[in-house]
Structures are given as structure tokens and as C-alpha cells.
Image (cartoon, rainbow, N blue to C red; front, side):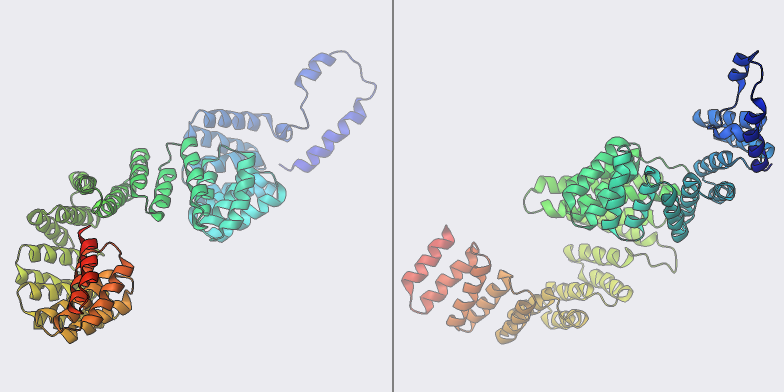
Length: 514
């Protein structure tokens, strides 16, 4: 039904009403339509169906509400408010194509409806057509500059898809000023600040988002990502735990995201274990035990869900290795490797072979270890680490020539790999080829010029060939980079004695004792 002739008719009515009797005026006022009401233009039965739909939607009865709005539209095909309401229900039901169609129908009848353009943009956003969504949101903003939802949606795209955190913050500031309870806007603003390396502002916004909506796991998972960027592993672990608690898988595909939460927390716990290893042994061990706990939870519920089950076995194996449980680690890493379907090469496969080989090495089964190192090298042939470990396995057997060959292979993969030069230098030292050892330690120094150990080892080689002045220079460089290196002070004292400076030698030896 066209509303234009109806509007002309309604505007004409007062002209014919002049001079009419006041009899029955109160009753007429009670039933008169208010022209400011949008429903003024629609058939009463359509309005009744629409209002029933609104009531049902507020009660959470989405299917029935959808039927009511559809009924209203069957009776009044130009009922733009019903199209918008139907679109919103369809968004909640995740039928995004139908939602977009409903919003576009509303726009057909009202080309200046900010609400309809915003709804169309949200449907496009869910369907992954970001440019179309962005244009719809900008159009909505043209018609309503103070619409908090529109401002929030534009800020969301600027931060998450346009990679423009500065512009995103500007829109999100306006959105939050109009609606301080918009949890997603706080989360997006936090993410924008994080990308600008403004981590204090980032965490403040994410905590606010979580306070507003503690049931949305994304608030906690995003907060965890910010903590991880700052290497705050304990805080990240807590936030990931809250994300796991808040997340409820609604369908089979959602399980992947649920399992990834456990895997991310296991990774954070592993990093905490590495970080605490030197300063708090008990905390480090507890972190590794917690990694094993997360892995067991995944494997108990989803023992065959590739690749997550394989990653869980892998994480458990690494944690067991760090706890010195080499037999258990070998078993877990073997299960990780065996869980891979034929022809697949997940990212953890080469590291699993490498780590299992390291466990064999620590059990003195170097022939088994080299087999795993070869497998790791064949999967990731650019990685120098398997070649380094092959060298270490030969050195463990006392075959320093073969060890040097493998160290050279590692260096050929990565000429900046200082550890390969160090171990090559140690092998030459064992062969009493001190000049070559010095050359290797010099190569290590060129790549890591602030590492005191490299200077110390070079100094030891100079001592062996009685180059005491060069030894003094090496030990002095070591102490410049690590003033508390007692062994360098002790060797400096010995070198000074060899140079005929007993008093100076005694001074260094005293400092070493202190």
C-alpha cells in the first residue's frame, strides 16, 4: 500500500472538520491516531502483529517474533519498522543473508534510515564483506551522527580490519561517550591502544570490557593477548583461564576455539616455566606441571581431534622433558608424532622429532637421537638447530671431527647462529687446535658482541698457547659485559701472574672469591 495518497487524505481531514459539533469529542480524542507515531500510516492489524513481535522479541521468543513480523509485512508490505525488527531477529538467529535482505527492504521504503543501514552493515560484517559493511556504516552515520551503535561499528572496522588504531580510537571515544556500557567498544579501544604500544591504556579498557560483560570470552582472550605482548605470563594465564570459563561451545565447530584456549594457556605456562627457571625453581616446576594438566584435559575429552590432540601430546612432552622426565617425554612426543595422518606436516612435527632426539641424547642414546635430528632436518631443511644437535651428539661420543662437520652445516643454514660457532670452538679446543678454536669464538663474538662467555672461552684458548696479553684482553672484555663473572676474574688473576704482576693477580683472585 502506498503511504503517499493516505498522507494527503489525512492532511485534508482537518479542513472538513471545521465547525463540526463537539458532541462525542472526548471519545474521538481517545481513539485518534497520533501523526508522530510511525504506526500512524499502517493498517491496524499489521500494527497489532508488529507490536506482538516486539513483545515476543523482548521475551526472547525469537522464532515466534520472526513469524509475527513476517505476518505484519504480509499485511503491510511497506512497513519499514517491521523490516528492521525482522532483520534484527535474523541477525540473532545468525541468518545473515536473510537479515541483510530485510534491512535492504527497509531502505527501499526509507532511504534515510540509519538503523536499516546499520543493520545491513552488521549483516555484511558477519558475512565477511567488510568493504560493503563499512560503506553501510558510513551511510548510517550520514543520517545519524549521534548513533552510538554506528560509531562503535565504524571503530570496530578501523581497528580490526583497516589497521588504523588512531582513527578507530576517535570513533570509539565518541561511541563510549554516548554508551559507556558498550563492552565491545572498550575491547576494540583496548586493542587499538595495544597496537600503539600503549599497554596501560589497553589493559584498562580490556578490564572495563570484562567488567561490563564477564560472559564474553573475547574480553578475556584479548586481554590475555595484551599481557602476552608484554611477556606478562602469569597475568595472561589468569585471563585465559577466565576466557575458558566464559566460553561455551554452541556447535561442533566451536570446539576448536575452546581447545585453542587450553593450548594458549599451556603455551603461556610453558613460557612462565622458562622465565622462572633461573630465579624460582619451584614456580618453574609448577608451571610445567600445569602444562601437563592442560594437555591431559584436552586428551581426556578429545583424544583424536587432529591437530589439537597432537599439540597436546607435544606440549606434555616438552613439559616432561623440562621436568627431567625423559622417558615420559619420549612417550608423549612419540604419541604426538604418531597422531599425524599420512601426508600431513603440522607445525609441531619437526620440533617433536627434535625434542624427542634431545631426550634420547640426554639418555646417552645418541644413535637414536641422530635419527630424530635427521628427520627434523628433512622436514625443515633451513633450520640450523637439528644440525647443531647432531654435532652435540657426536661430541657426546667424543667424535669431535664429525661434530665439527655438523656445526659447519648448522652455520651454512644460518651464518649468524652464534651457538654453532661456540660449539665448534669447543670441539677444536678438545682437539687442542686452539688457533681454530679462537677463530670460532671470534665468529661467535661478531654475532653476539655483548656475550661475556664468548670472550671468556677465547681467553682460555689464549692461555693454552701462552698468549697472556691477549688472554688479559679477552677476560677484561668478559668482565666489561659481566662484572660479576667470577671465573673470568680468577683467570684474569692467573694471566696477570703469568705476566709478572702477582699483586694484580692476587687482587683479581680476591675479587673472584668475593
